[in-house]
Length: 296
Image: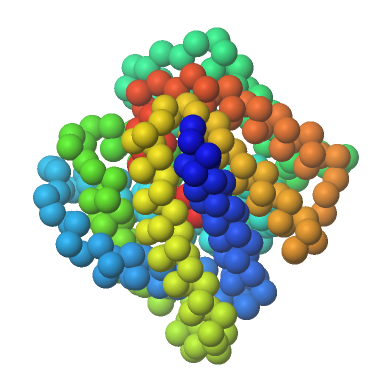
């Protein structure tokens, strides 16, 4: 990989990691409604990508369902989960996305995996369980359960995407924005009364976070990501972007003072090693995941 492209990739990973910290600050520090935060983000993405809605592959219902699962459904659950968990532990639990996608591809698409990828799946699950474990037994917080549910929703979306032909990443991003914004607004109005007043009360930090999340992360970093995937092998890119969870953990500990204990260190190491093993031996479904997924 050229030095310039490597620098771009590292900058992209840092943008994703910083956004994880900012999102935690928004939903916890500013106490902003997480569903409304997601809706505002998707509204900006939707407006910016209007020209790319067409041509849309058919069937439209499958495209809309997939876009919501990987957009509003995924990020809505993740932002709510992040409110009740730390960015460091959430970054580890998010690594369940790859093994979950592989398992679903085996069940519904007839994909076959090697024993090495099976070992990677086992390591990832083991790492996540260690992070959730305490001396008194399994302690699964509501926040981490929601984060895990977000990864499962995204994995289901990837499997559905496998059945859509001719889907361009930029077109998919546009549909994610438009399909997600209205359900997120409706859910926010239902579950987060007074959300607009609270968001206005949060002031310019909320506005800046939304713009950063939509423009710099969804549009800017994702464009860099897809560009690099077109230039280099998916396994190389997917291995290098493991810098994102590592950077999230470091920033969570140093900036937000997330507790750094033995369980987090060991669990993170096992989970990231498992994902690395999976990423270095991608199958067709995993390559699609790398091309279409939109990191937070």
